[in-house]
Image (tube, rainbow over all chains, first blue to last red; front, side, top):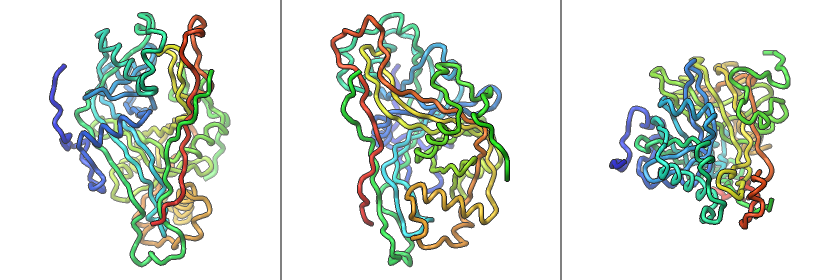
Length: 204
Length: 204
């Protein structure tokens, strides 16, 4: 599969940010960095009955594709494999923005929203590459040390890929933006940084 | 509004977990604890054109309701205020589960999924309580020190509430579950704990 993804991503009816457009970014570098840092995405789809469903799942970006996996008997995998429209969103919370007024409180965050439809990866080499990518994202360099994947395990796993062609990032960073007349209000204001911190391995 | 929410939450067509049902929890205590710890939820809804959309937003649980807010000109607020079916999901990632085989790699997590429809909060006292709750969640005890909210600010804000009546938690915890024949495979296995860590306030 060769295709050229335009950079920046084109603004579409679905991705154009109308509220606070200065927070939007369409360049590949920003979108990729957020996708590569986030461990979990939230996938939204609509059931045949018209019910929206949002489920969290692991994922990895491999070039211009996003890959997710699940059991072949997973309902979400079956629905998404049917080619329904989906929305995949990731968000990273970077800080609590504490202002002088409640109204200007906010959060610093980086999010990405991707629209598209997924297809099932059936080619064995592509499927192996996807499982490799998903594992290496959690623990870089670990794959080669693991007990090798078996054909039975590959068969029990559905791998889906979503082309990364229609995406937008939204980013808020920096200090609170208070009203000028509030700046002398006697309460501390600023940002409490938040960071996902990894501890030491707890051996099994 | 008085209503009694049954505990545990009833299993419905939408909330019953069929895959790995042992990870599901329907009791209020588990669901509330996850909702109260998570800073951001992901709300899924379907547009008139049939497109699912998932957007992250701040939220707070107030008793048996979930409250979100946004600008009165926000598209998501307008769509949700129309009473469309929605799905609100939160997820907390607690650890990377590193097994002896790629197949048994996993993540420890706690998630909650809520189904329902939102309604606009118009009562001024209820609206004030919602804004208070949203602010206090970010910084407990801060509200009383802030420059008071103005009528103009309240007017510029849409507050929506979602009854917490149809919800389910999913939780994975503990070490990897390896195949018996892999236990002597020579690679370290266990859990890398992950935790959202707050730093010191960076003054504005």
